[in-house]
Length: 202
Image (tube, rainbow, N blue to C red):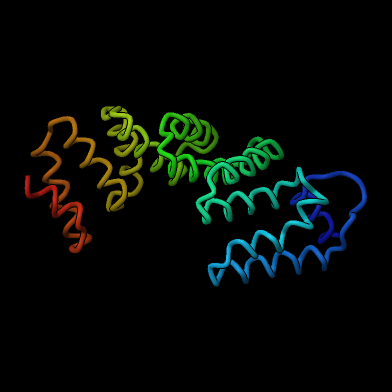
């Protein structure tokens, strides 16, 4: 009973199952195995009979969104992530996934919008804030990007990703000396950081 209840949540459908639990489990297992070898096309094919039975299911669309992203088929990825979000509108993981093909296509304003939705639900979500800071920086909204990075560094003072976002945004604001101090701190924590080394040359 518990197993089937979990499956109901994952598929987000009503009524009887057209496929048996073991068939679904086997399909996902094969998909994960293909993914491990980098065979994303077959990883997708392994899921298609599940998708055909449950085209509006949350889990299958979430996974297809990820696999199409890995294949760099971003339009397909966006399509499935949107379906996953429609199935579970409050899902943070689906929205985080959705940002991946958007970032790959440099659609930073859309990434910004989705990330604000994420942090409205989960204010300190790590990747939601990181991708928001990055998108804002790419849109040249440096002051806001700085605030996001500083907010997260209050929680994660030695986090390399947010230290770099803060330094890069400050550098772009013309605060080069402040930025260089942060880059020097980064090199203490991450001595081989290529970006920090490059910016310290300016």
